[in-house]
Length: 182
Image (cartoon, rainbow, N blue to C red; front, side, top):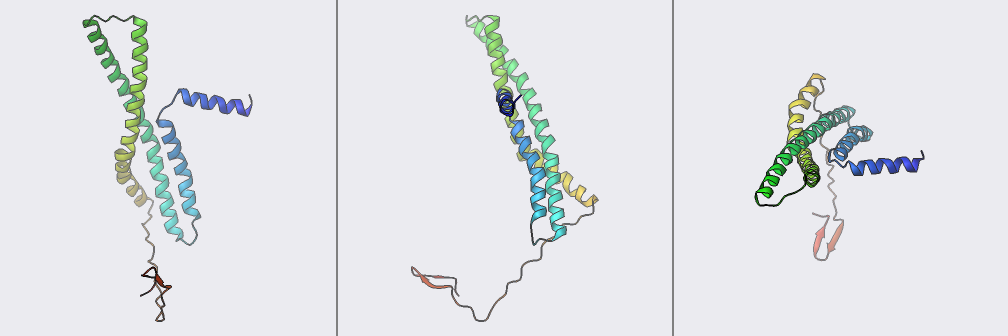
C-alpha cells in the first residue's frame, strides 16, 4: 500500500465516520503535548513558574481528553434512544393518517434519523463538556493535585519601570495629538 493510498483510506474512513469527538480529542491531545513544551521553551521566565504552568496545562488536557470522549459518547447513545422512540411515534402517526410505508423505507428513514440525532447530541455533549464539565473538573482536581506535588503558584515579580528625569516626547505632534510625551 502506497502512502497516497494510506492517506486516502484514512480520509475516507474519517469522512464516513464523522464524529465531533475526533477533532476535539485530537486538538486536546496536541494541546497536552505542545502547550507544556512551548511553555518550557519560553526564555526569560522563572524556571519554577514555567514548570508549574506546564504541569497545569498538561493536567488540564489529561482531564479534557477522556471527558470529551465520555460526554460525546454518552449523549450520542441518548440521541439514538431519543430518535428511535421519536421515529416510532412518527410512524404510528403516519399510519393513523392513512400513510403506509414499507418496512424497508421505515428502516432507512429510522437509520438516517438516528445517525443525525447521534451526531447532533454528540456535538452538544462535546460542547457541554468544554463549557461546563471540564472547567468544573479542573477546578476540583488540578489544584489538589498541584498541592500534592508541593508546587506553589509562583507569581512573577512585577517589572520595575525606570523613570528618567529627562523625558522628552517621542513625537511633538501627530495631527494635533501629543504622542509619547508628558
